[in-house]
Length: 404
Image (cartoon, rainbow, N blue to C red; front, side, top):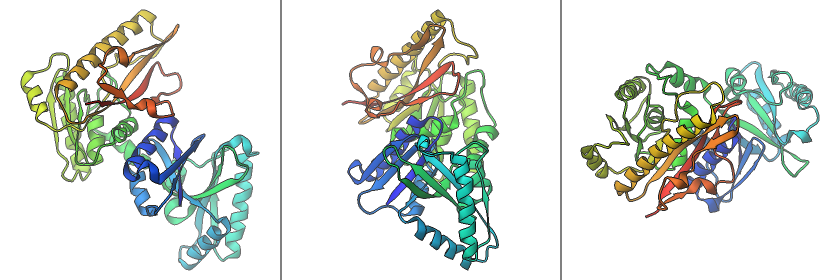
């Protein structure tokens, strides 16, 4: 059994998130992973999970726009689809077709989709099924998540996905089983009551990805020592973790508490617990440190303060000064984490790069943390970066593990 996943705009992070989740759940010896362009394929070597189980795992992801199952026999799939909707009294159904993968192998993707859609419509009609089809935006090769969601293609119709592989002229075919719930992400992102645009805001989907990269079991505790308005805390609670949140800024602590309480009004947080408190990494309160030593913390997930938001490239000396300040903050954090003497500890954090006229100014983790930490994110074959076009501050996602 094979499943496909379509990455979001930050491809490397999307792929790393999927690999972490499924390798942790099923073991690297039981799955095969292949990637090309925006597609990741997972093949299960032994008994595969059901489609419904895969949908549960998919719903945990933050960086994947849709997923589905590879169809081994395309003719049989169309025949079974026609039978399904012919027997169901649904009236007219709606479907769509998308191309993904190595598209330079596909001549005129949009034209091909339109032509193939007409053929599928004709086939369904010959089997007694009335249908209409949704085309991608003109010039595009794929339906957007919004088109699939708004047309209920995964519930009341279907999306056929054709995948052009890296080293093969043969197209794989798949059927979409789920798309990212954009409305739900947007609801949490834009409707939460407390935000802080001055200090900067961690993107919600990135927070979800980072929590997944921590690779800890639901029910365990995640700490964000730079919690800001609580984005990491909200996503971790949503995924079933207990959370600790702290910040040197009391306003941030208040914002986090407000947003978590709002989450509790709109989402079932089950038995997840939270605690949010004032705490300065650079001048830690001894009593709180003692409490943290007696608290089992499985992972630290955070975006430390990277400096004020920027709209234009930064002067080189200013970028180097900001990088120095960030490095000092990280040094304090990792010294504290070693002092907590946790049995095992993962850290997932944002490390910035600053764009200047002379190029990028980076922060070197190796120069500020001890050799007791292994940078496990270097094991991934993809760059773990979150950036947008013309980003001034680029987010590099680092995953580290304390080597006891």
